[in-house]
Image 1 (tube, rainbow, N blue to C red):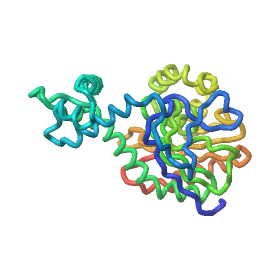
Image 2 (image 1 turned 90 degrees about the vertical axis):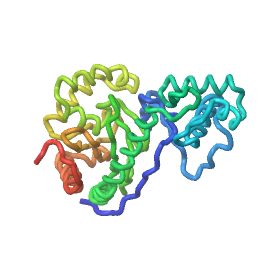
Image 3 (image 1 turned 90 degrees about the horizontal axis):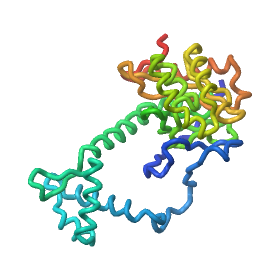
Image 4 (image 1 turned 30 degrees about the vertical axis):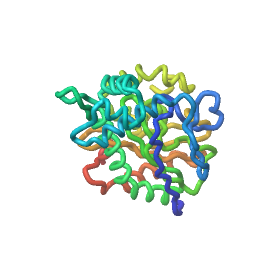
Length: 300
């Protein structure tokens, strides 16, 4: 195998401006997919995008309430602190309360952060923990294979790319950016996850994702066949249905028999013949073998 140092890219897409369905950067695919990329060394915007005033106001309200700690904040305090009239502050708080992002204390006079924020924070914490856990394994895989390595987690019927490790062999386009969401089955990692699921659950996901597949130019039946092939192989494999000339191999990792993540390696298709495909799988499995609490599917 080619040995060389990889290049890490552990940046995060922390602002949820990416469309939830389809966000991939691919060549010969520009008409059907949308790329959301912040260029390196590009200065940040001096002012927020147009039409986001209400969103920014809601964020300011959340921060104000958070600053109140256990005691929370009264409506009038929030309005005064942020320079809002009481009616506007009340309207924002009402919307946030409807979404469980804030809640009124029993005394009905103060607001606190709501349970939905706890859920969101727990998810974010888990993603950071998973990313850090897999970092050494990804670095090793990129060095051994020379190809780009991606770490993806499942979120409902989607996968989210949470980290990548760049290899020394270039691919024509970065198929995934950190923060990219794709429907399960659109790519090797999603195929590996679907292959692990019980058949009935897998079928339900495939049915729910049909419109999402079509949105990014994938034939749902092609995805079904790719899932069946991945199940037979014992790992996720796509040979160019997402991006012409680019193939991917992925292994799903489990924690207490539940999907924790999938690690995939992407390379130009000429580099992924049957022999090398098996070498990549072996590299992933060897690098992840010592991870605490993690098992791989299928077990060896």
